[in-house]
Length: 556
Image 1 (cartoon, one colour):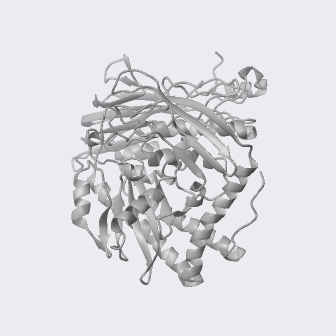
Image 2 (tube, rainbow, N blue to C red):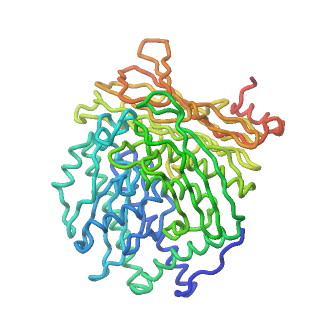
Image 3 (cartoon, rainbow, N blue to C red):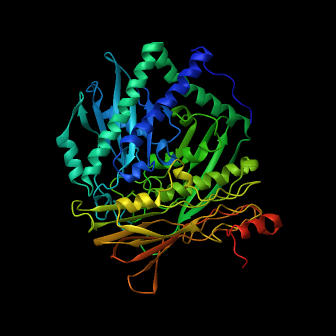
């Protein structure tokens, strides 16, 4: 692929490069601030993203720690804050929003937005997105798979002030926290995110002092123009054409069984690209719907994989057009339930991988596993001072086999790049659980000339818990992780329960909510590997032997 060598028509190349990298470093400093000060175990394991915006709300820079599922939505929520508070902003203000119907993802992703002023001139915004452990709703963790509308999913926060001219609006923050199951962590995370936005403010003003306001604001514009020119140039070098595919969500829990199609048509014409979701299923009567902002973010995340050397900002979005039929599963509107938007998101990303693999066969890749979530809440009898515990855990799995290389083993999902694998010891410290087993899941990878990456198996024991319920959020039990070019699928997701004192195992499947659990119960769950690439019979015997020795593959 031809590399872009043109930088900026306005700034000299050195200043442009310094500012471009300084903007990214500024966002990385926000991440470091959050890691040092956050209260919740979820955010500590990097379920967060940050951004720097220009004065119009366009994204100027994302950081190296950000996760794919957030990045294509942050400009939307910044623009919504501007729409609500334009003309009524001041230094020291911080606003909160989590509204998926205003371009966000789901209610758990709460964003804090700070306007940045140089003297009396608004020069930009910093934004911090953190996944809060609970936002209320009908079940602990706010993931109710049976929710037919948003009113069972938790608190919807339209733009409001949390800090006014530097003064903490404790009445507003306490009202929000009081509607969650983990109020102490929520208040702590509010301050952590606010401090992250302030860290960006300090750094941006330092750049202004060094280079001048005009240079910095011009740099914000030109880093976006730079990315736009680069993407358009590379698109123009590709053949015009149309590619189509379809993937499926396992079922509509609110309306019985049935595979739910998500259809995508991708068209490249000149230096533009169009994604058309016409023919996708209508919204369903459960939480596995995606609002338009999250759908656009999935398109961005999937496509960005094929432009790895470019920074991500709003310049990347300018040549992308998305058509999503009204009231479809990828274009949900209020009050449709959307907390499970990650299931359509993952399908869209893998579908885009498939279509781009036809354009760039040297970078072809099979389907990656779908991230699963186990959530539980109740009273931890070991800690009488803490009324409710909040257990929220995800496990790693495998990515798809690639053209010339096996898939990545035991890693995070394609839409969660940046997430950490949660340490078992950390979970045991904050929750009444004990890890009984955590190991590579044998035969979890899709066979192929280049096999998929392998998943894991984890078994946990619930300790002294009272009035506890559990939810499990996943997919790919029926619409399994697929292979390409003759490669085979991997294993399905799902959870098995063993009651205290019993030997019988209960298969609960890949999705359920509000399931009562008790002290001594065990729950085991494997994660899928990635799909295989190419005919498994063409795999080198040496590689097969190595997989058997490593216990990745059984002799059978």
